Length: 297
Image (cartoon, rainbow, N blue to C red):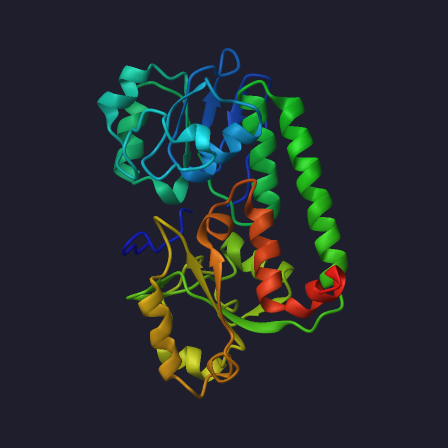
């Protein structure tokens, strides 16, 4: 995937199944054996870090990437790099499990990690259901099954409420800008595509199964989105100046009706427990009237 100024996605494939009490199969089809629940875990993606803390870990998380900034407890953790992790730093932390996102680690880096004989578990979510499944599985990997089930139940309840609210709305044509140079969006193979649909959107690039396809400006103009969505954040997202450049395309319905909206990249781009907040944020951007009426505003 193409990255520029960390605009891109921090991560998408069906979630894994438990093979036995101690052997798990990850999203890359690899079997990972754990003699006991992991007690020293290294996270190789922000979304993974959020999952680990959500299921009740803290001291057990011994290393994270430079982009892992949530929750606050993750920030002082030892840093092991990013898509090309520092192998010496990882070895020094003596982990008994490494959890990585397939889209956030280079294949050559993964191969080197496997040579260290430390269990590496790969996540590659394509749907919201995959994300929920990952939370459950990570809970089992670290012996926090009950905490994970509680997290998943709470997220399912929020999703159910949102589905009920958005069930009758007319889908709004939307273009989600992952990157601007080259222009990249999300296809049906990305979990973000499903987020857009759950939020009452019609993804204008949803016809392609490529998770993060390059898109021509001509195609965007032809498909005429009613809303342009830009992820924003401190370390990732689309800069304000690049957002404003879209305003020169006055024939776009989104521009004509001033519907250029921002959403927090950390909610939408990270396939972790806050992804549901991402769906809610997108829904508010696409259908503000639904929420203002509900809140009496």
